[in-house]
Picture 1 (cartoon, rainbow, N blue to C red):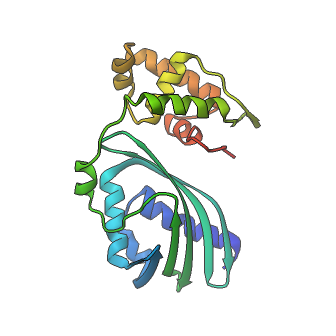
Picture 2 (cartoon, rainbow, N blue to C red):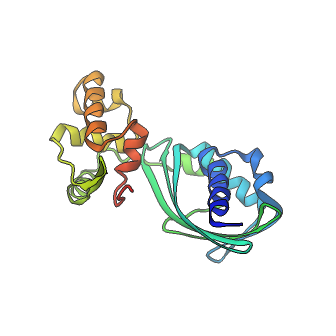
Length: 226
């Protein structure tokens, strides 16, 4: 397996597991006797199925960015950013994941995971949804996000640069990142949803994005979009 094939293989696994959350496809990607290592927890095929259902039922707008993959014989390691929105709270969930696979007959036979956020492979969707607490009015979070946006540089039309926002544009961006709809944002900041949509178009222009999903990925705090 060369680097291009390794990238394609790992990207395919992540597309089915994270983006599509396709439980039925897992048997085509992982061996039934797969062994996984996550901290001091050993993961099996049933745990991976549970994680896939968890992502499907708890999160929406799931996406990922596979940064790079390195391969040696039947082993490959990759760095991935996973981005999704909690269905109940609207919170944006972003995690940096490093995964290593041993591949046998074009399926994952063993894997190792390191993440910057907890990924409980045995947590149930019901537990996560019941315990989700909305946090849309967190003033501290809003101030922190404003500092991040002010300090960050974004790739716009081929150049890394800061993006200046009006107060209204920032409000719309903040609540968009929190997962609110245009109607919900309008109700929160007392403007019409059509005005919110107009601000979203302006934001997409400023950040050189084609869609709201693209905007949310690009503006993920701490990311320099390359």
